[in-house]
Image (tube, rainbow, N blue to C red; front, side, top):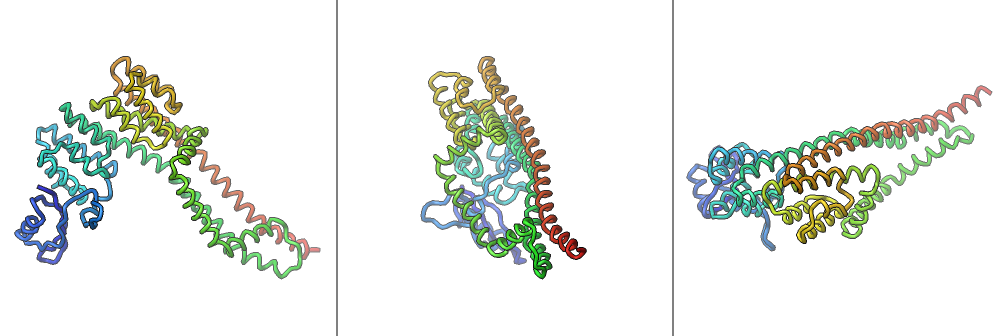
Length: 409
């Protein structure tokens, strides 16, 4: 059986859509007609499009992956249902009948269809790489082999919730400085573009030398009014060119290596990568994934190319018999505390637990760095805006004071 995403119209003319399972699209259409629905489209649920094939409604709907909160909810519900003794197919069937959005029910129905055909849950989820990462499929594969699937799913749910928490806190911390910067630029641009020219017209009738701040402000205003569109196009072109150059592997590697060495930004990137790496490795090792395979999966989770190369090199050294702590020392990106915890975990045989502890320490470090950046960014932005407004006020007031002196004389 396969899963089919359908759109149908009821007798009242209201459009309905959902997911049904059947041997063929014809059988699904017949089932819809028996329910009093007129089928409009019936498409097989698919996560990838074959070369040369057309894009169906179901495929377009499935292009968007799961958010961390959605992934956490799915894993938590599956773990609960499996812990209660329900078979895997019945647990997936219960989720497809829940209150989740249609795109989630479509993916779960397709996964259930493959499970009913005899595929393992990991293989069925691997058919949807946009929705289930390699971390998820590798952990579930190991959990199925070890008979600890519900425990692995609980770990994955905790990991997804932690990802969402960290991302939300970083976004909220950076939201105010970004809004302040955007509003400041908009206010200054409005003053220079519209207010300054009208005020300067008053000075045009007087034959006197204007102060240099006023002349500079008039020049900036004329430039923005006359060449503003070209300046905007230039900035957009520079952004596009930078993006194209950044996609080149060698340039991206050099740029990221430089960023990792910077004082504040490098500390932020190192803490973020260390937290992501240690948390991922803890989940994989706790799910009984072999060390070398876990390192290869963790390398795909990290963002920066230098760290990814260091992890892959460490995987090669571990495969040759070297300890994990010694293999990771050469990268100079993992903090000393994390290395000590990894070394202690290897010696005590409790590496997964100590990796979790290292991840919590790095996440606290990440929160601290984000707090420092935001606390510095706010006064710096306010100071910059104050200086710009002060310059505009002085540029306007100095000619007025000169006129008052001239009239008084």
